Length: 119
Image 1 (tube, rainbow, N blue to C red):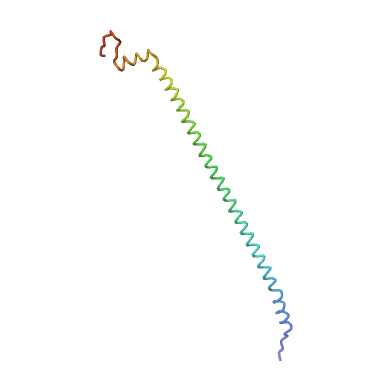
Image 2: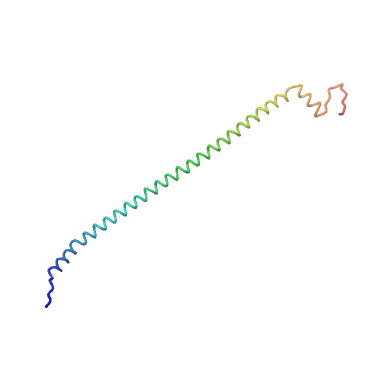
């Protein structure tokens, strides 16, 4: 007749009850630790990415500001040149000889006693 040794089964059952939960707990802790490390890595990369994006945007804004500054400086130079031209024109228009020339040529005015003629 065949007999079964229950002592070996009991030892195996005792071992699995005693040590298996510990192994599962260790494995779960390792898995949780790996998950935490992955989350931290993802957060670090996300922060790094956001910082890089911020720097790129700031660099772009800086480039735009430099272009705008150059454009404004060019406009300023053109306006200063135009202002100088207008100052010269103002000075020439305030000269009595030029005033007389404009009055005679453009407006057809004559001095008292002169005879006007048409061109």
